[in-house]
Image 1: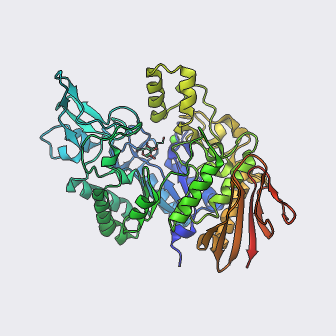
Image 2 (image 1 turned 90 degrees about the vertical axis):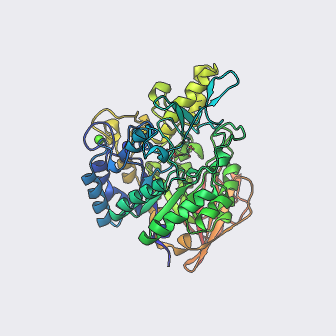
Length: 537
Ligand code: TEU
Ligand code: CA
């Protein structure tokens, strides 16, 4: 018998950009509640909610100032409880995004910890500065942040430095301290008692710093060898699992930074996490080649029995822009990705707007961008005298705001997201790319997702069946899903060029994104062509 997270499709909501109910230009919880029927109709079975906790928004919620209080911009705890109730009524499970590696520097714990004599001091990682030969103060070690700059910031109150793997507004919690572990257990029980189905745990494999020794220099996050997937981290997660996650039968998605198959396997096969989010297939657009995607997908599908299957999230480019061609082959590449997402073996994740083929946004300059990572990267490039047009162009490859432009509901002003001034620019292509228009259009991306989500729920072989990859020419990905309900062959052209299929295209056509019903005499696949055959019952 499959677990619910093997049968259901999970939909990720970035609350700030999903639906604004009160006209302040910021998405909120009542807005999400107003769209639960939409999500039910789409056919998803669970929601992963990016953080809605109190936060000063340096990292838009991934800097938590109170884990058991709701950011007033998003609503109240009563709204949150109503969301859980209304979602439950529709048999939609809710997964909270839990950011435990660090808090906000506005969290009460950190504010208290700034006093060296406080009992909260050891909730964080403080060290005295080093002195250079000339007696100048230096950070305690050479670690750098994932978001540029040193991973240490001096607090003038004590003259000591505190560690932050991300921005200086996100001080890392100290998981060597049993009190911190107990506090996080308390937070998790609070939400599980309210009825959440589990957590997506932010950078969970970074939480335990095995040592604070200098690291070997690297472009990003020097020092990461001392805190990535450490034995101490496993010990903490086993404790969480035994004492909280198992008793509540919680579904735990761990975001694994720089995850390898072995490191993810260690987390999911030793009673710690349920699934691990890793990013090897999230190939950068700069230097993109479809073969890289094919190799990474096959490697992870063969390497792990069960994968989270996703092509976009709130942290980067839109998938149709990253893996496809959102200009010449928008419809074809978006539906090619949908065909893969819903037939590869694992739990499918749809990020808000992916179901209508939302694309990267045409930001004109850095002033339109709100994402702290993009702004810091731009500042750093300019510090090295990279001309601003080039610096901006480079930043656009990593810009997380591509995924954070407001959800496009209809072709009214501001895409129906808000009646006010949106916090971030609406993508001007909302006139055509929007839920209302696509729901009404039979061959739309939305209807393609809607149909395949439904088909997946009716096809055990796509959910529980074995997966077998077939050898095919470059940029053609083909695999079979074999289960009691039958055997299916999925054949996909990952490329924008017509390509020899190199494989037999016979079989009963269950789905094609070129609405072709018979491939018996065809030998080639058109750009981004994706076909699902039933080859026997
Ligand atoms: O992201 C961690 C992480 O993977 C980032 O370093 C990511 O690679 C980067 O955002 C891509 O540009 C998690 C959250 O998903 C992200 O939104 C937070 O900013 C970050 O942790 C810190 O909490
Ligand atoms: Ca609002």
